[in-house]
Image (cartoon, rainbow, N blue to C red; front, side, top):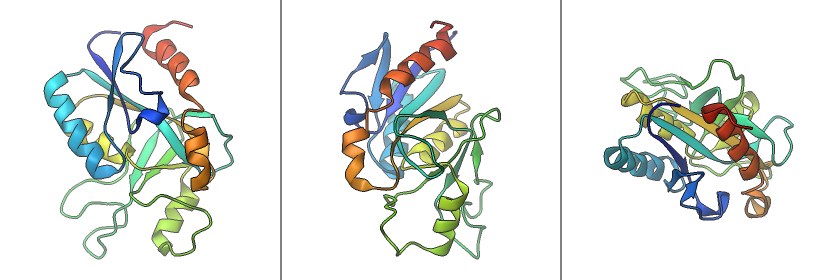
Length: 192
């Protein structure tokens, strides 16, 4: 691998609070789209990386098992500014779904609403995205957008922590961290 790679994650519970993994720095961006975008912007300014790799937990929407590691192919934004733009698109811009890896068919829905399968008060368009996508998270779209604006390659690996049951998240938030480490070394360094 050529260039400087950094790792970013939302919360320390996803990686045990480590500051590095195999010599690669890990930065926390916080939970939610605003925290993620703001903190990643500052990190990019200070670190000047060539590649950004996001990792962390996500909610399962399509029958995956807890701990399954998935590479995000396309990420969708939970934004509803109709009639000024189609659902998931930012008005007065060309921002819509972002393709991270055309080889992966995994679709991620990024929302600032914690998805809980027991709730019934979500909007119709929100539920359509829940039905469409494989996984749900709270940061991926914002991170991808920040990197896209700066032409920095961005990858996202998510592991399943729950099936839309908020009480399971803490218990399983780190369930796929070891798998992610192996995938990272294999993908970027040709090891394992």
